[in-house]
Length: 180
Length: 180
Image (cartoon, rainbow over all chains, first blue to last red; front, side, top):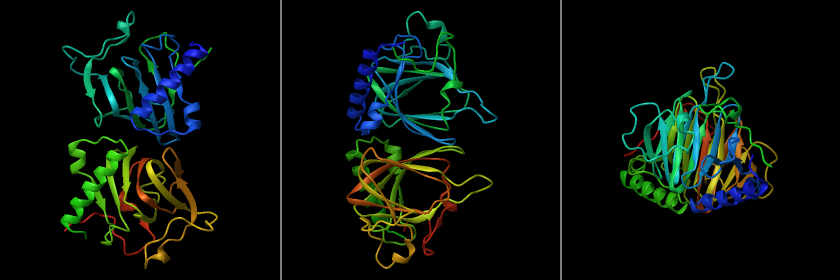
């Protein structure tokens, strides 16, 4: 659980990154920037800041902000209620992001798994996304991603988000946000 | 059918508008910018420039560029093959766009329907979208939109796009692109 101060600080920084990417959000959206620490209280290394534009039964669109070297931990989106899992496209808008998926492992990966949790990062095929680059993930595919040295802003286009159904490799992770 | 010159000119201008909005696209995407004149050969007043990022069975995301006062003509997305029609969210990124949908007509609308085709613009409830503003349309809802004086860049997040199924109010419209 992160502190209130850390939460507001992360929101403020996320807003600055979005501005650098030329992305305009409303005052209401700014107030509602989600800060996900995945229940680990190591936000600087493991976390994600999100602006959810729309999330209906059929379609979801968000902006994701990653601070420098911040990691979204390994997870997958399983089938739910007879629907295939979430399908998502990540499009880098600003900065650089290293995306890891199943396949031939990178010989010299740019990403570094969070210290002490290396065992919970199991897929190592590397896709480097610079601004304008994108990658579409099939449902139920294990993946994790990490920003480069400057951080990153990434648009996510997907089917409905059901964060509570995500399956993380690290058993200590709790996706539901909690703030102190 | 627009001329080759007009097509390349529109692509070049669309790229400039995207750059003004801070949106990076790849050289491949630049080459593939779609120029829709709706078969009317009045591109300056009726048309749309599109970059399609992704369009799978489930999800579609695009950037739409509208030149100053350019109009996307009135249409709706009907149910297809047992699926409800396309659901779409328009989010203004740059400039200003006037969106018209069913409901109480605007007393003094900002948008002006293309000259000589006024009869094919039948919904007049006005939603003005400035950067950061968005609107989600239910499937099969009649709508049309027009950029303000500076043009507009609009992100569209939707279910699968099947342009060939769209139903336009103006019977002269042909959605399939043709270039001379």
